[in-house]
Length: 64
Image (cartoon, rainbow, N blue to C red):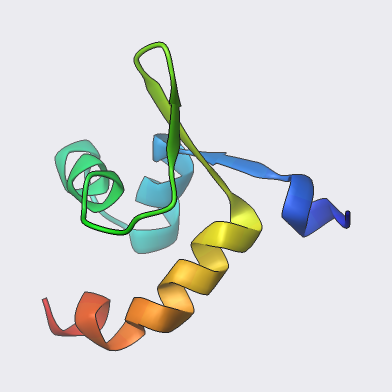
């Protein structure tokens, strides 16, 4: 696997990428079809899965 496939993003990373607050980042993480996984109380997403999800949902994310 390449670095992007192995890199794991946190909710804080999602906040930074979208320029949103913590509550909005958690709303994104909990949205239907978001490719995250949970360890304990923390949520994570592989960067590659996040990029693919964003490409599939780009129009929906922009319009909200």
